[in-house]
Image 1: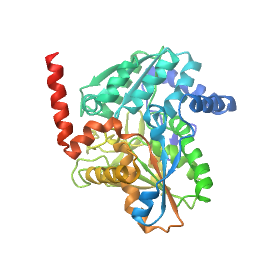
Image 2: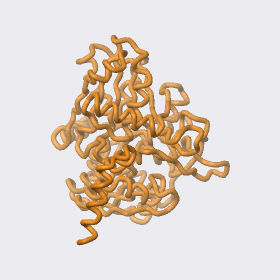
Image 3: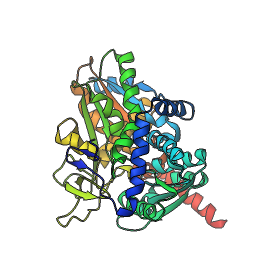
Image 4: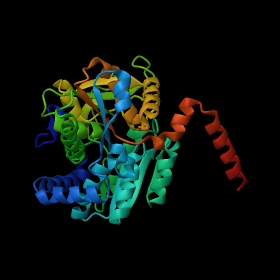
Length: 410
């Protein structure tokens, strides 16, 4: 990104005057950290001792045989502490917060993984923490809400609009405007006003750095393709950033197709004509919006992928044709999840399963001498209620009803 926070024509910092000084302080501290080898070393040390870095690159032998094409490797961000890639960004921003002397952090969350990671970081660093979460997502991701609260965070259900991620972001900004002196907004994805997109991508780039070294070790050469799901774009930027240097590696982002591209119930920004350029929530990117610039309602079976916008860095890479974007429907995602569980004993998050669905369409078209990497951004146990509902599992339904009766007696 350039000095004004733009990737091409996308990005920027469209912020109220009351936040100007706060953003200047953040930009200056971030610039100092980027120039400091000691900071990155401290970050690597933290992630290797508190989290699970480097996360493994798993050869999916059974899936590879099933499709009969490329060797399939899975980058296991689900094994990162708190169960997703979100800890990479959150712990990095936590180190920034310590340097800036802030005492309180706020965050937005959709799937709940960023909220859980932020609550974890706040507990470790002794910070007050408030998490904003759309009311719809609170219901879909109840296990994560439970753990956020037990970690000491205050979880605020947002009842405005579609009651999902975009509304949680709006509410978090309202909080920040009134509490700038002691509060840092731990933005969860590679979106928002500069320097957040670049900063989040930097912390997440550890994924691709590791994956590139690991694939060379196990496969002897770079992969043919790298797949990642795309909501806001943090896990995609995390694994894509290193491979942008490799011109022979195709990068594929898979968006939330929901009920289908023609249904109006999806979150497809860069692989359909439904999105248009706009400015909202402090930056310029491709948004799902109507002719009046009002944000549309979105849908995805995955709570972390139903965002109306997308990283301005990804919008630039899309425009330059450096990343190809596809989408996967809810049904395709459940099928990919089911196949991965039964073939490999691995349970991807519903968000990550979009990347699996995209990869499964194409793996069989490649040579056995080729390899592909799927970024498994998170683990699926957080989605147990949604997945059980999708399977229409009768024993799970019986369990929930029985447990509900038990609680009602007490």
